[in-house]
Image (cartoon, rainbow, N blue to C red; front, side, top):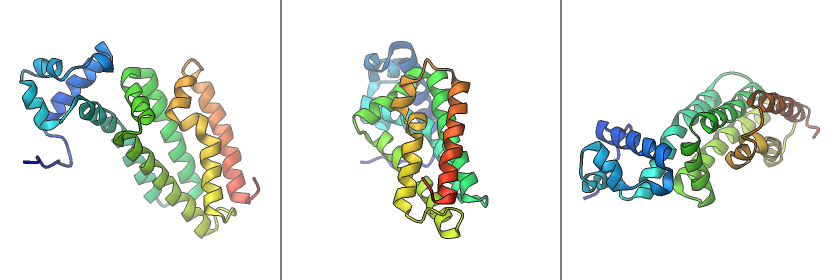
Length: 204
Protein backbone atom coordinates (compact mmCIF):
# COMPACT_ATOMS: atom_id res chain seq x y z
CA UNK A 1 0.00 0.00 0.00
CA UNK A 2 1.39 3.40 -0.99
CA UNK A 3 1.46 5.83 1.92
CA UNK A 4 0.01 9.19 0.81
CA UNK A 5 2.31 12.21 1.01
CA UNK A 6 1.09 15.12 3.09
CA UNK A 7 1.55 18.77 2.28
CA UNK A 8 3.68 19.16 5.42
CA UNK A 9 5.85 16.46 7.00
CA UNK A 10 4.40 14.54 9.93
CA UNK A 11 6.23 14.88 13.26
CA UNK A 12 7.91 11.47 12.85
CA UNK A 13 8.97 12.31 9.32
CA UNK A 14 10.32 15.67 10.48
CA UNK A 15 12.32 13.97 13.25
CA UNK A 16 13.81 11.47 10.81
CA UNK A 17 14.78 14.28 8.43
CA UNK A 18 16.37 16.32 11.21
CA UNK A 19 18.39 13.35 12.44
CA UNK A 20 19.44 12.40 8.92
CA UNK A 21 20.59 15.98 8.23
CA UNK A 22 22.58 15.90 11.48
CA UNK A 23 24.23 12.64 10.36
CA UNK A 24 25.13 14.27 7.02
CA UNK A 25 26.83 17.10 8.90
CA UNK A 26 28.65 14.79 11.30
CA UNK A 27 29.68 11.93 9.02
CA UNK A 28 29.23 13.09 5.44
CA UNK A 29 26.53 11.89 3.08
CA UNK A 30 28.50 8.83 1.93
CA UNK A 31 28.65 7.44 5.47
CA UNK A 32 25.05 8.06 6.41
CA UNK A 33 23.05 4.86 6.85
CA UNK A 34 19.34 4.31 7.34
CA UNK A 35 20.19 1.93 10.20
CA UNK A 36 22.17 4.65 11.97
CA UNK A 37 19.44 7.24 11.54
CA UNK A 38 16.84 4.74 12.75
CA UNK A 39 18.89 3.93 15.85
CA UNK A 40 19.11 7.61 16.81
CA UNK A 41 15.38 7.98 16.15
CA UNK A 42 14.64 5.06 18.46
CA UNK A 43 12.98 2.98 15.79
CA UNK A 44 13.77 0.14 13.43
CA UNK A 45 15.16 0.82 9.99
CA UNK A 46 12.02 -0.84 8.60
CA UNK A 47 10.01 1.98 10.16
CA UNK A 48 12.22 4.60 8.47
CA UNK A 49 11.52 2.86 5.16
CA UNK A 50 7.80 3.49 5.72
CA UNK A 51 8.56 7.18 5.20
CA UNK A 52 11.54 7.03 2.83
CA UNK A 53 12.02 4.05 0.51
CA UNK A 54 15.80 4.41 0.35
CA UNK A 55 18.77 6.36 1.64
CA UNK A 56 18.81 8.29 -1.65
CA UNK A 57 15.16 9.30 -1.13
CA UNK A 58 15.99 10.44 2.41
CA UNK A 59 18.87 12.62 1.21
CA UNK A 60 16.72 14.00 -1.60
CA UNK A 61 14.06 15.07 0.88
CA UNK A 62 16.65 16.84 3.04
CA UNK A 63 17.64 18.78 -0.08
CA UNK A 64 14.07 19.57 -1.09
CA UNK A 65 13.14 20.65 2.44
CA UNK A 66 15.65 23.49 2.68
CA UNK A 67 14.83 24.70 -0.84
CA UNK A 68 11.07 25.00 -0.28
CA UNK A 69 11.16 28.32 1.62
CA UNK A 70 13.24 29.84 -1.18
CA UNK A 71 10.80 28.58 -3.81
CA UNK A 72 7.91 30.03 -1.80
CA UNK A 73 9.69 33.39 -1.61
CA UNK A 74 10.15 33.41 -5.38
CA UNK A 75 6.48 32.62 -5.96
CA UNK A 76 5.46 35.39 -3.58
CA UNK A 77 7.74 37.88 -5.35
CA UNK A 78 6.47 36.84 -8.80
CA UNK A 79 2.87 37.29 -7.65
CA UNK A 80 3.54 40.74 -6.23
CA UNK A 81 2.41 44.07 -7.65
CA UNK A 82 5.87 45.62 -8.03
CA UNK A 83 7.31 46.40 -11.49
CA UNK A 84 8.85 43.40 -13.22
CA UNK A 85 12.40 44.75 -12.98
CA UNK A 86 12.09 45.17 -9.18
CA UNK A 87 10.65 41.68 -8.80
CA UNK A 88 13.33 40.11 -10.96
CA UNK A 89 16.12 41.83 -9.04
CA UNK A 90 14.65 40.74 -5.70
CA UNK A 91 14.25 37.14 -6.88
CA UNK A 92 17.78 36.81 -8.21
CA UNK A 93 19.26 38.29 -5.05
CA UNK A 94 17.10 35.95 -2.96
CA UNK A 95 18.51 32.91 -4.76
CA UNK A 96 22.08 34.18 -4.38
CA UNK A 97 21.69 34.92 -0.68
CA UNK A 98 19.90 31.67 0.16
CA UNK A 99 22.55 29.57 -1.57
CA UNK A 100 25.46 31.53 -0.12
CA UNK A 101 24.08 31.38 3.42
CA UNK A 102 23.56 27.63 3.14
CA UNK A 103 27.02 27.16 1.65
CA UNK A 104 28.62 29.14 4.50
CA UNK A 105 26.48 27.86 7.39
CA UNK A 106 25.62 24.30 6.36
CA UNK A 107 28.07 23.16 3.67
CA UNK A 108 27.45 19.43 4.06
CA UNK A 109 23.74 19.85 3.35
CA UNK A 110 24.46 22.34 0.56
CA UNK A 111 26.61 19.63 -1.04
CA UNK A 112 23.54 17.40 -1.22
CA UNK A 113 22.16 19.89 -3.75
CA UNK A 114 25.42 19.71 -5.70
CA UNK A 115 25.19 15.92 -5.76
CA UNK A 116 21.54 16.03 -6.80
CA UNK A 117 22.42 18.44 -9.62
CA UNK A 118 25.35 16.39 -10.88
CA UNK A 119 23.26 13.21 -10.96
CA UNK A 120 20.14 14.97 -12.30
CA UNK A 121 18.02 13.73 -9.42
CA UNK A 122 14.45 14.91 -8.84
CA UNK A 123 15.10 17.39 -5.99
CA UNK A 124 17.55 19.48 -8.03
CA UNK A 125 15.69 19.04 -11.31
CA UNK A 126 12.37 20.16 -9.83
CA UNK A 127 13.97 23.05 -7.94
CA UNK A 128 15.71 24.34 -11.05
CA UNK A 129 12.47 24.09 -13.03
CA UNK A 130 10.57 26.03 -10.36
CA UNK A 131 13.19 28.78 -10.18
CA UNK A 132 13.25 29.13 -13.95
CA UNK A 133 9.46 29.06 -14.19
CA UNK A 134 8.97 31.89 -11.68
CA UNK A 135 11.61 34.06 -13.33
CA UNK A 136 10.19 33.34 -16.76
CA UNK A 137 6.81 34.53 -15.50
CA UNK A 138 8.32 37.84 -14.44
CA UNK A 139 10.25 38.30 -17.68
CA UNK A 140 7.12 37.62 -19.72
CA UNK A 141 5.18 40.05 -17.54
CA UNK A 142 7.85 42.69 -18.10
CA UNK A 143 7.70 42.24 -21.86
CA UNK A 144 3.89 42.23 -21.93
CA UNK A 145 3.61 45.36 -19.77
CA UNK A 146 6.27 47.27 -21.65
CA UNK A 147 8.57 47.44 -18.63
CA UNK A 148 11.12 45.52 -20.71
CA UNK A 149 11.88 46.83 -24.19
CA UNK A 150 13.56 43.55 -25.11
CA UNK A 151 10.59 41.89 -26.80
CA UNK A 152 12.15 38.49 -27.49
CA UNK A 153 11.24 36.55 -24.34
CA UNK A 154 13.74 33.77 -24.93
CA UNK A 155 16.56 36.22 -25.53
CA UNK A 156 15.61 38.18 -22.42
CA UNK A 157 15.51 35.08 -20.23
CA UNK A 158 18.81 33.82 -21.66
CA UNK A 159 20.40 37.18 -20.85
CA UNK A 160 19.20 36.95 -17.24
CA UNK A 161 20.57 33.47 -16.67
CA UNK A 162 23.80 33.99 -18.62
CA UNK A 163 24.61 37.17 -16.70
CA UNK A 164 23.66 35.65 -13.34
CA UNK A 165 25.14 32.18 -13.73
CA UNK A 166 28.22 32.68 -11.57
CA UNK A 167 26.11 34.12 -8.75
CA UNK A 168 23.11 31.76 -8.70
CA UNK A 169 24.36 28.39 -9.89
CA UNK A 170 25.27 26.17 -6.91
CA UNK A 171 28.35 24.67 -8.57
CA UNK A 172 29.70 28.07 -9.54
CA UNK A 173 29.00 29.42 -6.09
CA UNK A 174 30.86 26.57 -4.41
CA UNK A 175 33.89 27.35 -6.57
CA UNK A 176 33.72 30.92 -5.20
CA UNK A 177 33.33 29.82 -1.59
CA UNK A 178 36.68 31.30 -0.53
CA UNK A 179 35.72 34.70 -1.93
CA UNK A 180 34.26 37.33 0.36
CA UNK A 181 30.48 37.01 0.47
CA UNK A 182 29.87 40.79 0.70
CA UNK A 183 32.27 41.43 -2.19
CA UNK A 184 30.53 38.83 -4.37
CA UNK A 185 27.15 40.29 -3.49
CA UNK A 186 28.31 43.75 -4.54
CA UNK A 187 29.61 42.39 -7.83
CA UNK A 188 26.33 40.61 -8.43
CA UNK A 189 24.39 43.80 -7.76
CA UNK A 190 26.47 45.59 -10.40
CA UNK A 191 25.85 42.78 -12.90
CA UNK A 192 22.14 42.89 -12.09
CA UNK A 193 22.03 46.64 -12.64
CA UNK A 194 23.55 46.24 -16.11
CA UNK A 195 21.28 43.30 -16.96
CA UNK A 196 18.12 45.10 -15.91
CA UNK A 197 19.19 48.19 -17.85
CA UNK A 198 19.60 46.04 -20.95
CA UNK A 199 16.13 44.53 -20.46
CA UNK A 200 14.54 47.95 -19.96
CA UNK A 201 16.25 49.59 -22.94
CA UNK A 202 16.31 46.57 -25.26
CA UNK A 203 20.03 47.06 -25.88
CA UNK A 204 22.35 44.25 -24.79
